[in-house]
Image (cartoon, rainbow, N blue to C red; front, side, top):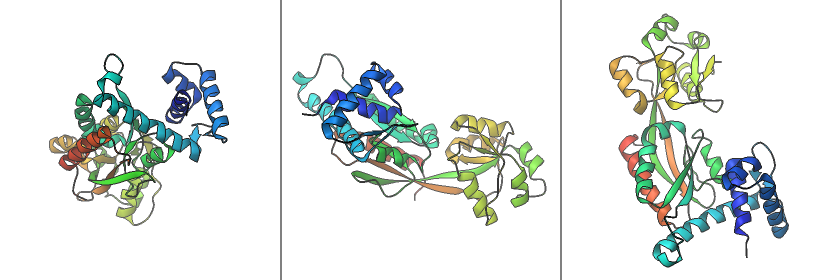
Length: 298
């Protein structure tokens, strides 16, 4: 039989990225986490974690992480069908999900809230760029993700959600100050831009399409979807904003498009573990329905 305390420790290290944070999540000492994983590695005969910043699972470790998450889902369903097996009180299973910040700030949070209000689950959200959330699936750190990648990792299904439209926008005062002579490679190379973080390439993609070449952009890093909008309103820089998030500001004129009619549509996909689970199915239904209401047709 597998040692599920050790498997839980392994999953926590992969999800949290370090032994110390995993120990905090499990309310044990880092030494206890290390001992459990070492015993599990001796049992299976190979390394399960690549120690680093962050810690990463080996291929075998990833498979074990996926196994323990799916076992938790199956146990939750069995307790629902056979209440006598359930412990006293309400039990909720952890459901780790990865999502990009702009989706979380707009259409995704209401979908998760509707699911969580009726399901015996505690959602654990991890935020990353849509082109990188699929990595969380491959690592075995999450069971589902909103991604910008159509092809899912092995063992996962992929459903098209639609496209999130981005607009290059800034405050009117910023545009008047930096683009009085027009918007081109020269002015863009001088005007400060906004990026979410080092993975955010939306501004570079828009500039490449507009100018037909790469341009080195001066950048302010603002790693918050709402603060990103606030920075643009304050005249800090121009950036690619979700239309869903800035529509009221465009209507009021507090933000304007840098170049009208140059929107950038980013397709999104919902990828989730293939193993049958009523919880995953319920979450998927809410996510797909919310995306259909909010996103543009692919």
